[in-house]
Image (cartoon, rainbow, N blue to C red):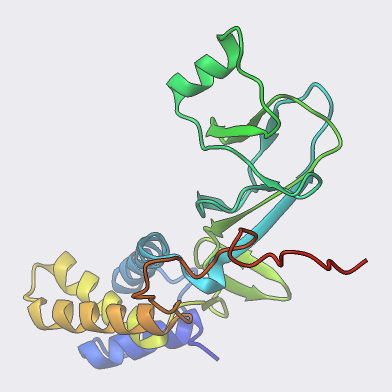
Length: 235
């Protein structure tokens, strides 16, 4: 179990010699504690943007409505995971994301329709074309909620002393020390190098990686002349 907010701040203040350590954080009026809380929230948001952390990966699915082209993004949407947008009804990937110029062509050109749905993300909406109904669409995204408040509740910042970050304790601890020293105008060069090395290590260990093939053909071939038998197909 990762540090709670209170445990994180107590550990940081202990390592920095900022004693006595606070007995509570949220609602504390001590300027030192207020600053550490603000820096911890900023640190978590910054780390969440640096990598496609597996704990923040979420799937979103919705069914299209005839004549409706815009669908709201999830409330915790931070950024899209590319090439995960699929039409599960037709079993086809969506074409996109389209640029503004491409979208204008789709909407204005004489011949612009095809069998696959096109999409773009604009104004916090997923916009599809054509506006066909009854299709189950799905994509993966990175959530902005990096705080586990317990009971299935997730947040994008600390709001209680019992809130827990989804990121590694050592990463949060070292990063918070870097930000505190930088805010105070102190030398943080050692802490910065430690944080960068730790960040790279934790990022590499966050999830498994694909094998890299040195062959001339990709290994993810589905159906081609290379893997379909000549005859005697099963009935």
